[in-house]
Amino acid sequence: MSFREELSLLVRSRYPLIYIPTREEERAEAAIAQCAKSMGGDRAVYTWDYVDGYQGNPTDNGFGRRNPLQALELIEKVPASAAAIFVLRDYHRFLEDIAISRKLRNLLRLLKAQPKNIVILSAQLSVPDELSSSITVLEFPLPDVTEIRTEVDRILGAAGSQLSARDTDELVRSCQGLALERIRRVLSRGIAAHGTFEPGDIDLILEEKRQTIRQTQILEFYPASQKISDIGGLDSLKDWLLTRGGAFSEKARQYGLPHPRGLMLVGIQGTGKSLTAKAIAHHWHLPLLRLDVGRLFGGLVGESESRTRQMIQLAEALAPCILWIDEIDKAFAGFDGRGDSGTTSRVFGTFITWLAEKSSPVFVVATANNIQSLPPEMLRRGRFDEIFFVGLPSQEEREAIFAVHLARLRPHNLSIYDLKRLAYETPDFSGAEIEQAIIEAMHIGFSQNRDFTHDDLLTAVSQIIPLARTAQQQIEALQSWAAAGRARMASRQSSLTERIEQQRKSDSTSPD
Image (cartoon, rainbow, N blue to C red):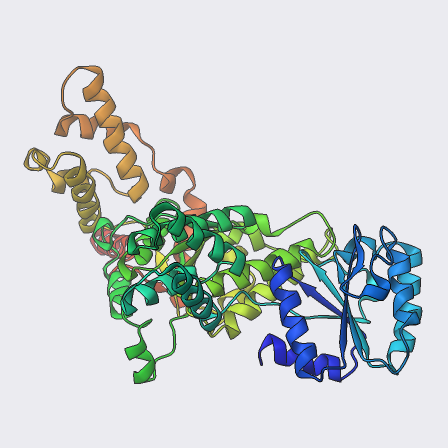
């Protein structure tokens, strides 16, 4: 059901108080006016704000200026049989006032028998407890593809800009996730720069989109330049990703495939989980949005839930996209709703419900270091397509990781490094620790005015104590969890399997 259809149903059903949280005030008011017009020309729309009072009606022009209580009195003065919608801008700021709250509740009793509706327009959702049972919240979505295409065609036509059908489709797709006013501004910017909008100006839209995401302070538009080939090892995970590379296409929809839902990457720190998220976005040619879950939580009542809904709305508007949630275990570890009036549990409930029920092509990549601290409902099938365990790299994978880094840093001298020896000398090293060993070797060579050598790498390796030794108990507990068959191995031959095999050989050769 579209916004206009749902609003029309609420109005006809005589829902007295409707709350529409949106930052697109002008577009929302236009939709309300169209809704009123479609229900018959006799339904009037009255609009009030704190500075100018009521507007648009000559009889009551300016009534209730700087007086939110008086704004409610006009609703009583309008004849009981007159159908009307009263739009109150930013009225959420006054709902905590006892006089306003009491007046509203008295007024709502009368409106149940009258064809009148109050609509509160606000950039944020804030509902006092005493009004929660009387207010109906109606989400106002960002413009869909049809609205964007209509507006793009109108602006480009007025400017005399001619774009091919392919460029127009790309332009419309790039505009998804932006408010209509921002789309108008960025198109006007391109036209002002060249006298016409050119295909190269689409980069302006991507920059505007980054600006929009930065302003939300919830999502971050993350550049993804890493490739699948930049990941050493993790062959099973790579195969899984390559198999699903075309699953977002229209051809896949015609085949009957649903959109891929997401992926949970569990494992030891520094084993390439975050790198994998970036590589997925690059390989699938999709925008990468990074969610800092900590930013979802605000200090005001209802702010955290509002931010969660805003994050979901923005991610779905930008779809198809990759939503990367790094270290999700830090945000929801062991929550029980105590100490924050249940805010964490409500945010968690909203989030996992969306994970299970979303139909939009938002591919969620969540990473976690301590899977045992996550609530079990997060791991239920249906939230994610697969849960992969990313363990410490095997000797073969460590050789591949050394090769990736050294080929990037010293492509012409790669042959001077004995990769097999380096892999052998780095048991229990993660990918991040291997990279750090190479950086340490470069410091040694640079300090002596020469290039770093194989011996420098061996020296650096000998000085690094890997996390698998400093946090041995935690690492072994995590590996035991994976060994119990609770997750799919990201590597064909993980270091966990390697360790078990080494232990088996050691036991078989030891004396009785």
